[in-house]
Image (cartoon, rainbow, N blue to C red; front, side, top):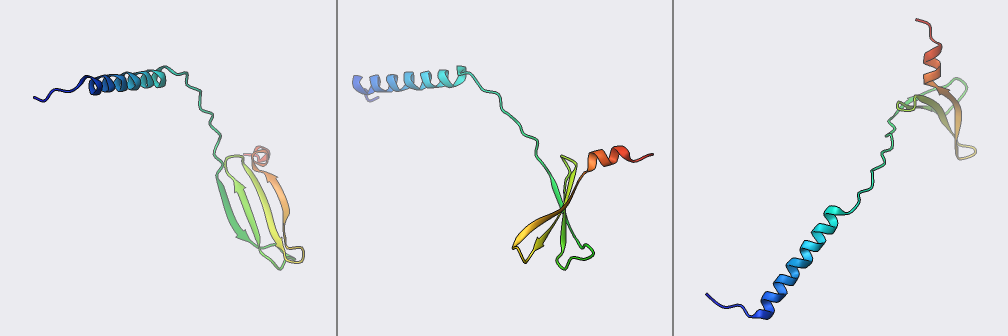
Length: 96
């Protein structure tokens, strides 16, 4: 068996001590709590509205229970909001 000189052995020992210190720091470091944000889910349905040449898109946020209708105004080159409904409050007004 070949003999290892003391400089190499001391370097390996120092490196192991360094790794052990890093492992201890990572293991015992305080951990922050993760913040979760509700993930919204959307459904978009194309449609038409009487009196409009362009189509309409109805976008429903199923998490927030909201609905919006939008259309594209080619004269202004902008998307226009046609209407908004809170589906949760509408559902509460329905009689069984």
